[in-house]
Length: 342
Image (cartoon, rainbow, N blue to C red; front, top):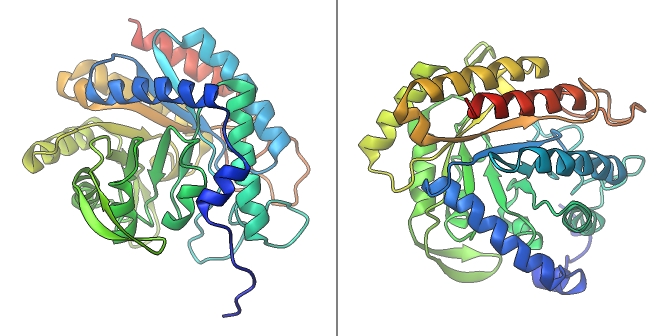
């Protein structure tokens, strides 16, 4: 490989593009609110909502401002965490890899410019909407560039078996959701949750470090793929019961669950997310153990339904996986509110 340029450290980037102290104080309040939900101290319901990948800054900000207005309408019952995913995992490595790799869609990849663009986007969302986002930890060494801006971090299905992801998650001070692997093996997912909840001694970004364990690490069910590449959901009542029993067998400290309504749970049909969400809410309302465990849903949503090629010109339409459009998203959130308040 060719070494192109030495990247600045996370500390250098954070110092150059700092978050205002007032917003940092607000983030502490927001983080505590999320942690209280995961601990069962609050009965609010979490919705992690946003595009499959956060691409064009102006469009993402438009979407997030709509999401902020919706949060005001539902704030007594629902806590919205905007999904601002800036690194996109690719099954065979090709294709658009997210804002981190390609901050300008009409140019080639530029990681340094991407780091700055990612931090700027997260920072602008906080400053313009008051919402603190979620991102995926695709590269553990990159999370330090934005960890002070995030209120939630996810570890994806392709990364959840990786040792470094698990260990770094144990040292983060915000909740980390561990998705089940592509195979759907819940035991593997719970191994990641348990690892992240425990303290560890390891190396990170050239340092020898000790983590203290992250009790807010938890499971995310996102469906699975069989040997024929067929999507199989794992959000049904029986799946949720199975996870609860496995949690109890492992004696896990925090038995929280988020259900991902898209990916293999919807067979990548973005419109099916509505049915998935309502099915999960029904299971939660009919079983107290599921009610105690289930803390929220993850929904892929943008301004327009569906998806388009990376060079597409439709405003607010995903350039990666298909997303639920804004009108349907708002209706779904208000329907969830109504169901939760019954």
